[in-house]
Length: 90
Image (cartoon, rainbow, N blue to C red):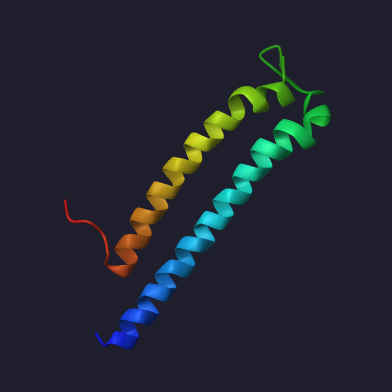
């Protein structure tokens, strides 16, 4: 593989990585700031287990979402690493 092909491959890898991170950051922002602060009054009209949904998102829903984001990122990066041939062999 020539240096130009390696550079193009690395650039394509980085672009897909940045696109994935940007998408997950948008989800993080919407859940933490949007559901926990901006839309709390609308979400509080709905109750889950006796608690208002806005409160639930601010206290626990955001934590579950953050954990899901971590697992999604790890899974997608493993897939991306395989696609570009840069995975760790363990």
